[in-house]
Image (cartoon, rainbow, N blue to C red; front, side, top):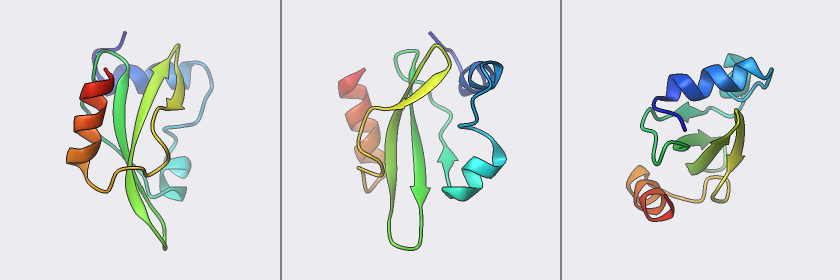
Length: 87
């Protein structure tokens, strides 16, 4: 269980994964929101030239998984409602 997004980032980096690396984040034009839901879920925002949206993520032992489809939600509020129902 994680208390902060910094805990998630640190664990992900400790196992030599690159989800939060600057190059990865820039490639996906990604933003990570700081709220942790139920100790393991968080929300990201990604965009490209064709679409943008919010994705619900889960951190399990430092590994990041998508819980929703990539860019499934059009607004942060939609993603937050969904993650609260999932958590």
